[in-house]
Image 1 (spheres, one colour):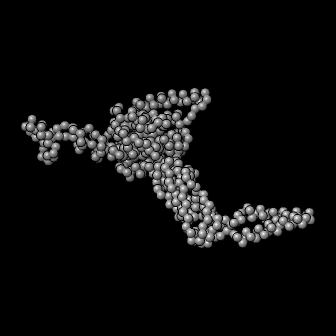
Image 2 (cartoon, rainbow, N blue to C red):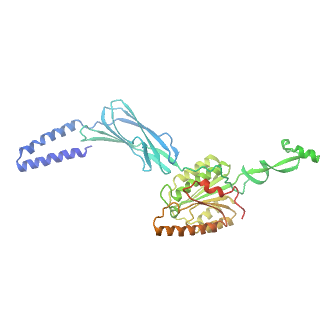
Image 3 (cartoon, rainbow, N blue to C red):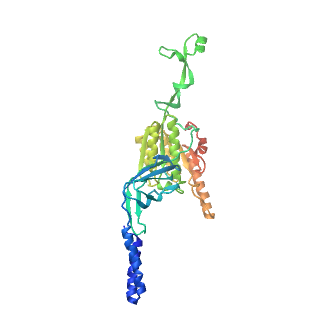
Length: 419
């Protein structure tokens, strides 16, 4: 391929020729000769053809936000010598180069292999494609080049980074028949003492209470409080109207991090967790156990972008038809939509315990100037009124996203109070 340099040389020849003939100046005509010579030499020394094998290794393909990955590129020249080779590895916009560069200029001898490396930092969550790799071999006079594009793409999944809330006690109040770590308030299989009962054939000998049996002259055995599991449903409000603030600090992004943190904590205690995402479409992940369920939830949250205007009534409809009854519902919403109160009342009437984690939209934006400060105070008063109404039916966490989530959730006990 020709470059602008060759076009400029050709244009210069035409201009000098016209000027020399028009003025009759042999000096101008004589200047054409070295330019023509330069064009001839550039045609002889044209850019070599590329016969190069490119391989890329990105290491980890799944990592949290803000982590750094190291990209390795190997170039193996199977053809003739390339005196000037330009290499450009295409990166997505949310990845920034931390060390080295994804744009190299090097040379390759015949049958030579060159190893290149650079480090990139992953920005927002999502799935990103690194590549393709563009190679260009330039002629010595920069008048031509040959280009090849290697469409090798490496997909890197950047997952939302949760917070450490392991010391908090978040668990559903109502339990199911499956074993877990929640005290069921009835006798069963567990570790905490519940009471004693008269021994019957088939009871385990190791549960016999010998002191009580000796005192009452009859065999008695211990009973323990059963430990079972429950169901929790995380409802994430990711609608367009609920997205306040800049990209990384917005209420939706903070809500996604809170959803990952809460799901990991509840699954760690052997409970089932489901997910409902309210955005341009209404997505959900049915409740499940273990690390596979956390993987499903994180995969569903990776692609979440704010959008849509689904009303809260649809959440009530989905919960009542596709999720277990009497589950604990954890709503993550900035409470901008005043209809949230009606939704909470309807869910409570259906027998659900509600915990609301509300990333504050007031701390996500800065207020400068007197009008903005007055509006900020007014919105804060409205928000406090909404939270006061919701606390009649649910536990509400007013979360300033500049502080850790664990600090804001210390007010939440292991069992929501009975209402």
